[in-house]
Image (cartoon, rainbow, N blue to C red; front, side, top):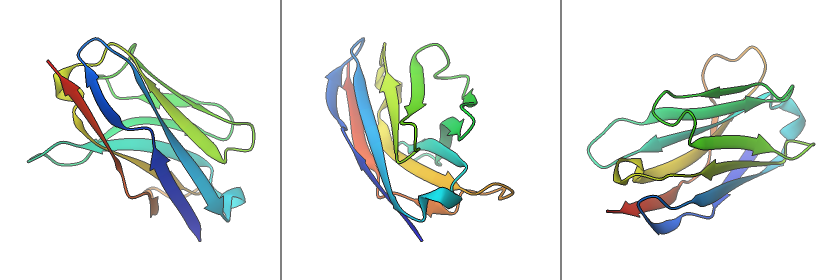
Length: 118
């Protein structure tokens, strides 16, 4: 099993920056991909960014150029640096993990709230 715990959410003004973190514990060696998703009120959860154990990164078009996903060397902690935040970035941000060969993310954190005021 893998346990994921997010932290670092909060309230920020539009144009500001925030960094959220995800601490992983348990069978972390089995994780190859770690991703960030978000869900705004009344909307479906959407993909934000992903990083893999080889360092490859993937971003949603809505955050490309503003958000950066990174990890520590052991991939026990993953970060999402969010710059130039917009009110439409307001959501609960979830960390997720999946193993090599898995199509769907199978481990999820509890989420952290990010609110961007205009």
